[in-house]
Amino acid sequence: MSADFFITAPKRFKRSGSVKAFTVDLSSRLRVFWIAGRAYRANDTVRPLVPTGFAYSSAADGQAGNVPPIFPTALAATVADGSLTWTAVIPGINALDPIASVAWSIVNGDGSLSVVSPVHTNEEVTAAFAGGIPGTTYRIQGLITTAAALVYDLNFDLQVDS
View (spheres, rainbow, N blue to C red):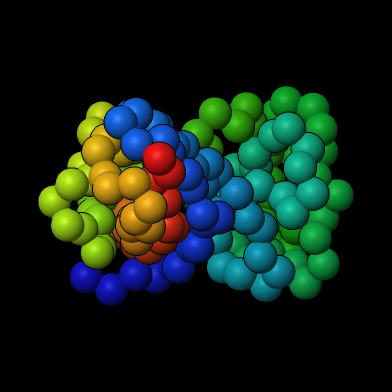
């Protein structure tokens, strides 16, 4: 499985004998942002590059203009954009490619460190790590697959301190 996007997170630390959970927020990477000149289909939802607190749904098939429209900041307000009309909607998970699954692995595992309690939401991945040999640095990999089948390869080093 090849990754579409590589994410390297800062080094993480945990004490020997402890169970330590780490959470990575991917919301900024999973948003579907407006793109100049792009063709959109009816009911596609985007977010503007400058947050307004709303997402915007297209009324019909069309193509975005070459300059971002001034997206309205009132619910149900509309704005013309190229051959499209966008309607402001409550964001919720609109314009989000939610996380569908996560597979965790310890790349240089020696059997002493384990992944426990992995969970994910639409926008965040969390895993706790137990065990490990003091003074050892482990390479952790999370392959995160979204509903649109994009794969994010999340990597970080986890150092076990004494």
